[in-house]
Length: 136
Image (cartoon, rainbow, N blue to C red; front, side, top):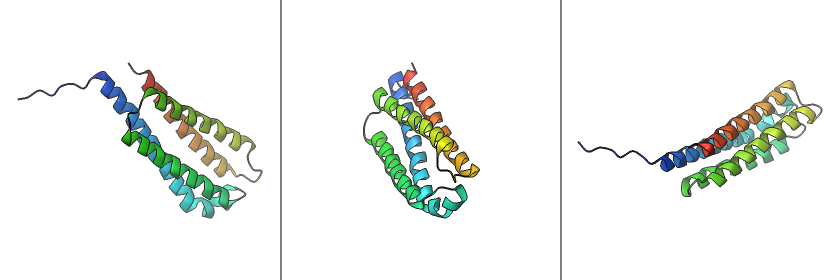
């Protein structure tokens, strides 16, 4: 019976970084689709002043998510790329806290919770990506 060769450690690290970027891209793209489909109807409930802003945000998230999926599919996912995406995720986390804290005056509790939940997911990806880069 032929033995399967163990993957070199570098291949496993590369696969981990690639899978994290794929998962991140999928989550971001799905969030963009959700905003495009449900943003305007939920706008009064969450208290966001303009449904158009949610639509633009949905388009941006969808494009960024597709970009992450494409980059992770067609090129090696190096440490630098992974750290750059982790930085963007941590900036999204910071922006989410700022918007929830000092955002539009009519922002409801549900709106603040949704914004903070999105920021928390981004930070979880950032932490996982940094840990993947530090992996030996």
